[in-house]
Amino acid sequence: MIKSLRGMNDILSEDYERFTYFINTATDVAQKYGFHFIETPLLEETALFKRSVGESSDIVGKEMYQFIDKGENDVCLRPEGTAGVVRAFIQKKLDKAGGLHRYFYHGSMFRYERPQKGRLRQFHQFGVESFGSESVYEDANMIMMVADILDACGIGYRLQLNSLGDSMCMPTYRDNLVKFVERRKDDVCEDCVRRLDTNPIRVLDCKNGKCQEIYVNAPKLIDNLCESCDTDFTVLKKILDTNEIKYEIDTNLVRGLDYYSKTAFEFVSDDIGSQSAIAGGGRYDRLVEFLDGKPTPAVGFAMGIERLMELIKMPEQTKEGYYIGALDENAVDLVVQLAHKKRRTDKVTIDYKAKNFKNHIKGADKVNAKYFVLIGSNEIQSGAIVIKNLEDKTEDNIPIEEF
Image (tube, rainbow, N blue to C red):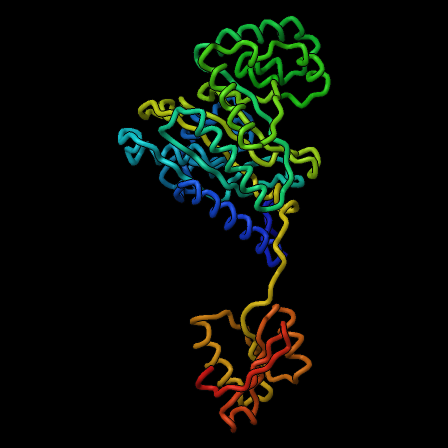
């Protein structure tokens, strides 16, 4: 028997209902915030992610589904959504158009890593990107949007917040952090030593318990912000306070690439084990420039849908639509004909087999139908049917043509 590839799951029935409920809810919230849908290809040039995500990252170094296609192009399945949206933004010359451009997207991403709960090799993200505003109010807008999506889905969370500084204050901080870690090189893990040469800020994100104990005493970025970054961070906190959005300051919350700046945020859940991050984002004012576009301020976030699936509180399911069944074989064609016409306005479920009342009512209950109609020789002869409302148990007798 041929099975699905490891870490690539099917989405069926109840999971699909939960999945689409989240997509529809998040889409509704994003549209209320004035964002528009964008779809980018699953397959992109590998160079896009090497330049955006960074060759030193685990995603590029270890996890990409990368191959040479029949045209000798070096391509890969997208491991994340932001780079493709930025590529489209530049390719369509929107970076030169000026103004504010706001997009949301959802779809499959691919990373070759060890599958575990909430982390698959093919997974799905909902993401939002905003281009053209350098205002910290747009950062707050993003955070409030995530909070609204999670609230609408009944998902509890804690918001963690930090500032990464900018090109004025980050270099000095990075030098101070490197000096701090180098004095303790013998005590930190190999990954942290390697990151000193490639991506020193990422040492703060190390999951090694011993390293975390050491970094408690490391220099804090928010204590080394320039006046502009410090003012923005203060304003951001004030906006969140005013809008009653609780947050925690996490001085080790980082985004390790050079184009990230200022606001960084993460929403975490205490209900899903060690993979506690359910949404994350921040400001990336230099990414458009990194990918050869006109310098454009930008901010965004992404949410891993698989991590949210068990947390989503589905609304109480209400009965809907019709179930139409045949009591004898000569009624099947009429059932199909009526269902075809009725589906122009309503959801209709039918059964092609003639059954008795008891078996048909089981079928109606299974699909949670609101209305129940049976057709047999008597209904064909009289030209009328009985519509039973399965919620309030009332019945209506109407002509077939009227139905």
